[in-house]
Length: 121
Image 1 (spheres, helix red, strand yellow):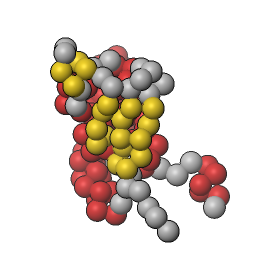
Image 2 (image 1 turned 90 degrees about the horizontal axis):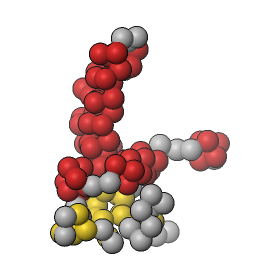
Image 3 (image 1 turned 120 degrees about the vertical axis):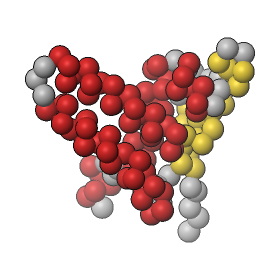
């Protein structure tokens, strides 16, 4: 058996851009849980609220969680320059295209959890 700890994704949001996503391991799972535990609690609280303030706070926390996922799971970005410099995770978070940032966060999230077919096996 050969296992690869990083997978390369081709961007759908920005054709020509590729990014590498780290796969889950036991140590990395523990690291991520520590990072998102508090944000997850706050998100759950505000998402359950019915007021506009709760909705705004929940959206802000979701963006913070996306940034955590990206910092934790995106290993490299290829084929993208931001303001003339090669993109990295920090410049993606600060100044990159929002659609690509969301795609990256979703790709990391997808590596963390089994889909329906994988759960059946």
